[in-house]
Image 1: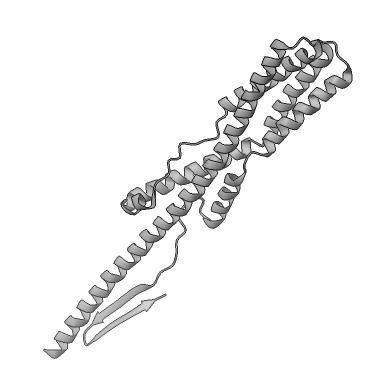
Image 2: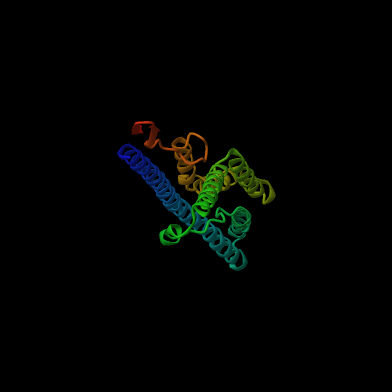
Length: 238
């Protein structure tokens, strides 16, 4: 009778420990997932803010340049100045158009820490996947913004403005070169000042997650037990 009682108590103890272990493991996994989402949300927010500031700044600069040069072109009586302002306004309005057709923002909407903690495990996984997709998109935008295609397009516009000054307006070759050089400095500055934080953050994320965008797994302790006639074994495997 006593032996059966001991076996029953051991079995009950084993079941209780196993359930508690599983509950603790699930809780730790969910806590880890929440922490990862919070870190990812912070990174996305910083990337979005930096890219948005850059985009708004250059859009405003191009817009102001267009208005200012257009106003001077309409009011000046100096032929050379008018020609320079017309070409300048033409290039800056193309800059505005380029900014408008190539936005740098994504569909990222930040979620507060309190809101994240209230989500179910499935919703957290879904939010993590959305965040990962946004991070990838931010990285792609940052990379495209510094690609050779952007340099080539800007160079073509700058070359055209120089040729218009030189040949179209029958000005000197040196003035055409000066126009090309000045516009090249402006456009290259715009390109190279575009934030690349998102690209670096994406690369670090991939390095931290060897399976791409899958959540990194961590090994945890595993309880095991064995009950047989006259004996009960309970242990933990790491």
